[in-house]
Image 1: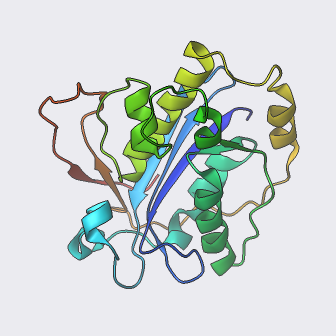
Image 2: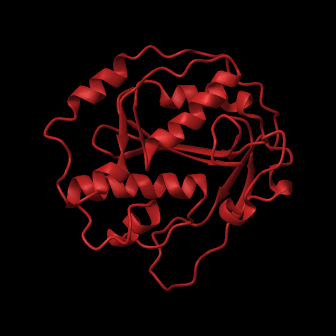
Amino acid sequence: MRGYAVVDVEATGRSPWRHRVVEVAVVLLDEQLRPEGEFSTLLDPAGPVGPTHVHRIAQEDVVGAPRFREVAPHLLERLAGRVLVGHHVSCDRAFLEREFARIGIPLPPVPLLCTMSLARGRLAGAGGYGLAACVAAAGLGWYPAHTALGDARATADLLRHCVHTLKCPPVDWAEPLTAAARVPWPRLGRAALRPAGALIRRDAPYGPWPQGGERPGLVLTALGGE
């Protein structure tokens, strides 16, 4: 499957070696950047959830959530064959690479596309190049920042904005797409997720929402195993 996998993780700290992923999201885009699907869940990090004041994940929120090894097959299915996209994508890749390594799965080298790099010099008036600043400069409106799904959706919107509005992609994106499709990926059997409440999605009604408007609250939704 050719296309893009826009990823975001929330973690218990800043170090992929010392900290764990506590939420992961993937937004799938086809070669024309059209949405093809989403995957998101909170994860049980087998310890403290870390900076709740940043990611707003409380310890009780991850009770009953799957461990990373349980969702690994689903993630591999969605990432395989695609260019990996993120805002400061090397950070998201580092956390994913370390989580897969903990269960004995080497994450293969795939082409990366960083929207932070793409936005530099192309978003006039941005107060910085963090995701929130770039989204604001692009006029994309409010989104639930520091939620994996909210950040991944916003990153996908920012990518489309840069490509379609600012006309800033390289002349030819076929090469990284082709290279990504040729990368051999490991395969795992379907995860043995618990049949009820296996995935826990943290979400807000999808925006973008106008700046200054009332912001919808986050909702935790228990989903069956995929």
